[in-house]
Amino acid sequence: VMIGLVEERNQAEMYRTLLTYNYLWRENGGIHMALDADGNAILLADIFHLDITADALAVIIESLLESVGSWRQVLENAADDEAEEDGMQNVVAV
Image (cartoon, rainbow, N blue to C red; front, top):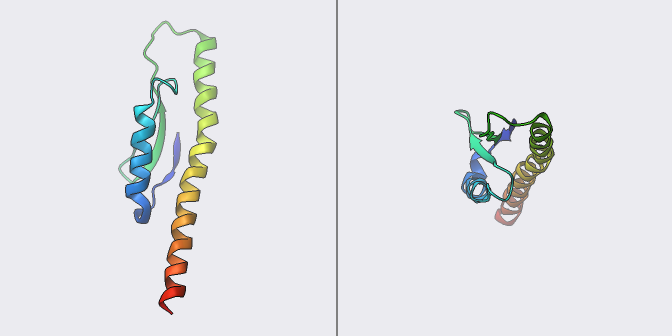
């Protein structure tokens, strides 16, 4: 699921956050983050079992969809925080 673009001005912080989240793959049910060629954050879920039940698949999909909103908020907040910092630097520079 595409979450959104990782802004250039806060890439280092967001990449660190995404990697930290990936480290917790056992705790979050195999859900992890990736980047596409355009720099968009992508939320993925690994499904390793070919014999997975419909109920188990539904739980994985539900968990994935619940994570989408949270991750979109993280990206938006990071962009907003960076914009506020840029604005304050401009005020201080004046």
